[in-house]
Image (cartoon, rainbow, N blue to C red; front, side):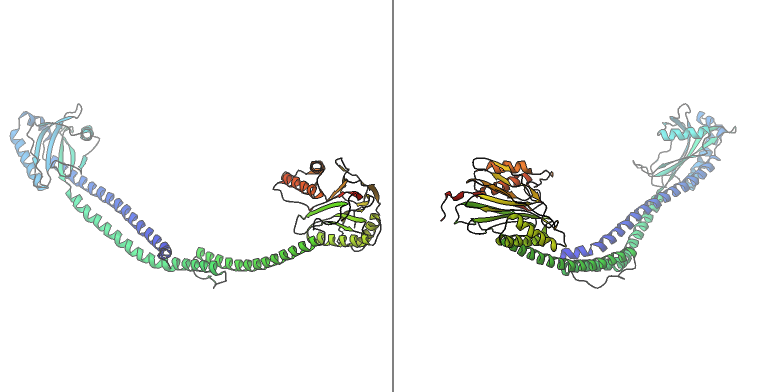
Length: 547
């Protein structure tokens, strides 16, 4: 087994386990992120509330009625005492800053400092206390909006978080509460700035625990999944795959796969494979039998075709020693064997019989019927009689044993070579075509009798015509005028006559080959629908000496 096949076999388990690991990793990230956000939010809320209470307590140390006096330099002793209290309180509650400001309420864009207590030891800061009356611009719009909310009484307190700071300033939270006078008017804002490094100190262990837990959970889940998937899925699937590969190679029924899994889908797959193997084995056996039978039938049909073709004259020139006539014929069955036939043979030294027929139907039944008819006509003709008498005999014999109810159209002619007299009878066959010397081919509309094998009471009549040297007779089956192209158009008698007259002065062989070429050009790639049989004889008379 190649490495590539091993990788393919391991692909299902590896991919599923890999997907589980990735899923747990994503799950850990999502849970960690949610936990991180929740943890940080809760921590911030706790800081905000606790810092608010610190700030609210600090406001009790301040006399809101004397803020203006402090700024004017009055109540200096009280101011200093309050500042001392705030310094002590600042160190006591471990905050970086406690400061009281009075904001310009015209746009809240500036403020003036009144009290300012600093404890840089809390988080190694480097703040410098503002002096009384120190003026500054408001830090940003966030502060302005919060100042306005406090002065208007919309908020009891406001909090600002500074988690990403620089220039020596550490992360902190600033909580602001209003300072009111005895008339309950907001006269200033007291701010408490508290370091929040505890949040960052707590976040790292939390994230570390989440990461470790996720990794451990992913490992445990992967091991469990590997064992579970391998036993419940990979092994059954591999067994199905191996059995499928074995069957594709050997084409023999293997051990049933039913029961390889308790899962419905895999059980259904195994059952389908079992059913497929049973059906395929049966199909292969049937196909083998059918192929053998088809080959046997093909061989028999090939032999039948050979027998059929040997039952009619097919060596040309047929009578090389005769100079008083020239004859050529061809037969092309639509299938391996056909129902058309032609025949010509010398009755005696001065008479030649000409036969062409077309049996109803096609294939083997028509071929058998054709051979019987041809034998009856040949034997009866050699016994003597006119074409009508011969066809009467053949019709009576065929009708007496025709349970298949088949029939055949026949044109039978006997040509007396010494005089050129042609005696013929037509049993429902196509009109013959005649060409007089120096003229063109024309349809000879002779009198038709009923088809041979149709009615036992049918009788046939002879007709005669005399051929002069150079005259030609062309007889054919309906496969010529009824040859069909891809658009179901018919070749027709007009095209047939045009093809004949295009080579009117040619030999019988040239004439038949030209007609066949024109038919093929017309039908092109369309399938041959009917047997196509033709016969042509040229009468040369006694002017030519025999060899």
